[in-house]
Length: 334
Image (tube, rainbow, N blue to C red; front, side):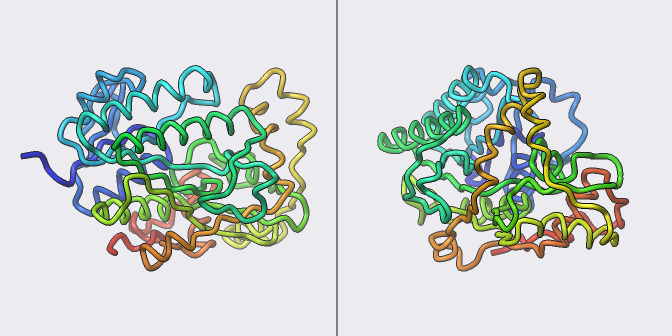
């Protein structure tokens, strides 16, 4: 008989995929992960690494045998070939979910929304994106909703911009710090003065996925929640937190040089995609988590400075204090 608490995580070497795998493992799940060269993986001990490619439906279906949860947290690296790879990857996961009767889990983003939905984003807010990447995210969610209409169970949890100890490409490292592996000598603010922004600390978001997974019997076939995370009403508060954690209030804070991104955009696909997201920093964006907190009772939440310290340590910007790996995370138990 298959283990009722077996999960397959696609993208387990990435930020949200890795954190979700760890959160599930901590709650007693058997966690499998797919990798093209699993023998090269040294980190994330305790996971069952299987050979395969997320683009290959046969690989994903095989890896998902007996799984009750499939976490689709895989993305093309560096924003490259999104238009060619994103939907085929999702189709592989959908095929596996249908074959096993598993629930497919997708971390959602704020890229789906345009100005007509600001400043407070709710689960039923209109999705009229302003960018190519946003249009693809909308297409992904529509495909999942259609699949749910045919009986495939789906869970989407939407969150703000990621940060955390194992986050990959993200606005915290690339937009606020603009560095990794060294103590920051200057900081940047991507947003307009006085503009609020929603941030998602990955261990908190991962704990949310794990808690929802354990309430499977209570979820509708198509479930969508918004994760509030850290709503920072003052646009400079993230950088101010970095200053506090560094113990260096005089580290200079500058506005992000968007003009420089524009100049480099024709030669760098990542910078071009970042530049297209500027509208998300010109206007306040907050996610309404009323539905989530009503369902779970509370949302996992780590204090900002604790979360920022852990993120800085993970980026090599601050020496590790040698704390237990779970310190600073929201409790895993419900």
